[in-house]
Image 1 (spheres, one colour):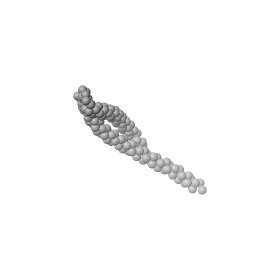
Image 2: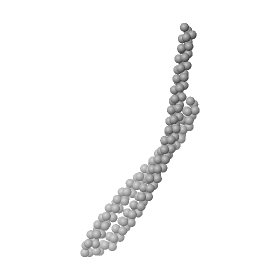
Image 3: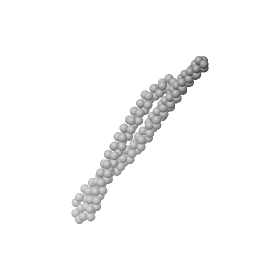
Length: 152
């Protein structure tokens, strides 16, 4: 019975360490997701700028006075390049997020395995304790039975 208590107590720090690792990895994932949301919002803002610029550029091309044409083309080109760079960064962050999710899954499985092992030891301890109690009750009952036989 003591061996199970010893095993359970030895696993307590391991569970604590594994839980801390899971928490740290979850925090990292949350930071990645916050950055991704920020980048998506920036991407949509640049997309809006690009689309507005294309609309203004087309309107300028159709007008008689084309004085702003080269400036608008440069602005649209800049918006398109920025949009493309942001999209590439977003794809990169998406890959990092997937990798972090896999890493988090691995550390969660490790924690789960240690917790399952510890719970197995607890179940064995309870069963052993139950057997010990039953054995004690059986001995008391047997003594009383034998005592009653001797007294008759």
